Image 1 (cartoon, one colour):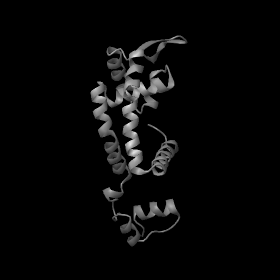
Image 2 (cartoon, one colour):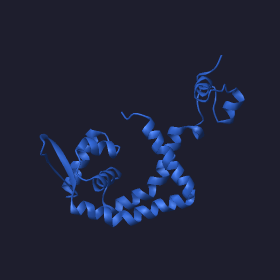
Image 3 (cartoon, helix red, strand yellow):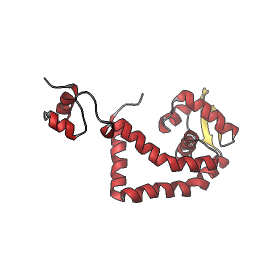
Image 4 (cartoon, helix red, strand yellow):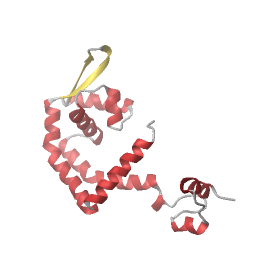
Length: 172
């Protein structure tokens, strides 16, 4: 009788894996090894990448989430909060608080949607754009460091794979 992991591996690959193969991939009968766990690997990689960025953002006076909102608005132009939340990987209730803080800092402005007064449109201000511009060189340098450590081809392949993984699923 196949374990759940063996069955899942067989379903994915079309090949039955024996217990020796499972051990090779850091799997036990019941659970993946943390060194082969995709969620844990993604979290570790995120922390590795975000550590230096957090220091830059602290100096800039914004949080990671605020930075993502500003980046989305700078890249996409004025948007409604639902689209911002989706593009910045934020939950809508969290975005509400983030927008309030950004508005208090005069980095964004909100105005009623001309086509539907119940909705609002969020726009980056000149100060918000200036904050992005003032920190873009440092941000790029931090990512270039990671790119150099990985090698350009592997860096681009990783981005492609992560974007493919994101596109293959549905967000909740």
